[in-house]
Amino acid sequence: MDIVILGAGNVGSYFGKALKDKEHTILQVYSLHLDHAKVLAKKLNCSATDDISKINKKAEIIIFAVTDHALEDLVKKINIPEAIAIHTSGSTDMNIFKGHFNHFGVLYPVQTFALTDRVDWARLPICIEGSDAKTFTKIKKLALCISSKVVKMNSTKRMTLHTAAVFANNFTNHLYVLANEILKKDHISFKLLLPLIEQSSINLQHESPSNLQTGPAKRNNLVTIKKHLKLLSDSPEFAKIYKMMSAAITEEHK
Amino acid sequence: MDIVILGAGNVGSYFGKALKDKEHTILQVYSLHLDHAKVLAKKLNCSATDDISKINKKAEIIIFAVTDHALEDLVKKINIPEAIAIHTSGSTDMNIFKGHFNHFGVLYPVQTFALTDRVDWARLPICIEGSDAKTFTKIKKLALCISSKVVKMNSTKRMTLHTAAVFANNFTNHLYVLANEILKKDHISFKLLLPLIEQSSINLQHESPSNLQTGPAKRNNLVTIKKHLKLLSDSPEFAKIYKMMSAAITEEHK
Image (cartoon, rainbow over all chains, first blue to last red):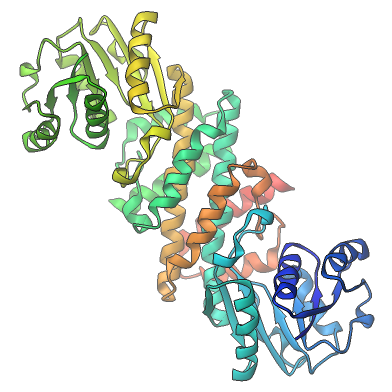
């Protein structure tokens, strides 16, 4: 297939490389920033542009690997209706393409886009969707070039999964940020928590999270909770999160 | 050393086995529940009791591997002042033993006590403290029987570490519980999130959490945030946590 990639960020880069490795042809990379497009285009041995009107009309597949914010606008500006349009967003309905393209779909990798060089993409799930059976089959073939875990999922369920991923990844990461800041004040290394964090991730492979809950809030141990809140007393924002999370855990286990 | 273990839960069991393997003698296991004490005592080839007055006076070391809640009361009831008293609590000051024992200290393993069979204890940090240099040296030797990562840490810092661990473990686990519940409503498997969770744990070994933050709240992407909140509209408790965590992340990155 002849493919154009819109967006030269982590997703665009990875998809471009993975698809080229599996003998697809990347025709062109587009980015708002020509220098970004050129860096990726060089790796993929193709042309680069920052001009929407110059997007290669021979594209059989156009992958929209751009931010959710840029996506809607970009869809409207591209007039190559016979190409298959694919976006990579967790929270955007497939039908964003309706009326602009005849065939379209979604390739959503369930992953965080921090430190992507270290990601083992081959084992991360990719959720796919297609506007019709033929398009779906083509998208599935593309997905299998990227990952062995390809899951059919409609736009409604994908939004649910994306919301859950925000809890499981973005919010947990913020709790690590807070833990790190608490430790820093006392010059304690965050590294001391890494075996605990790693163990928790391993435990989730064997047991559901509700069976893995531990800690003072679960036992409604008010003495320990009070000690922790005293320690957090000059960080009201930390104390607020501590109280809300503890109350939610106690409620869950009462 | 001749050791008595108070508490037959996860910590008591593990410490008992690890210390016996390294040629210490476990004299006795005490538990409020005689049947629990007996199960562990059988494994350690020692006696069991649920009677505080019958605790073996020949003990050189008494390990208080009981809940924070039970600890204070138990310390007061045991009258073997020449034994070294050691507790395993993250949030309890070493000086809880003062006036009751002449020599005392702490062995605090930085770990979650869910699924302990799967824990690789040898690489999890143990924070130790001793009432005097000689006692500290003895406790350090015991700690090195259990883990290769032994860290000297006073009671104030240990409390800070324990508080940070509540954020990094107990609260993150609750977010996994919420993610799981969100998915369940739409019959989506939590397993789809496991590679993402595992990747996040790997990323933390290479980068500080504040550099790993991603997601709509970081970018203050109000369109996506609004979509997620709409999806959570019949779960006000979930929406409340979503809003608070998102606001905290946006604030951190503005």
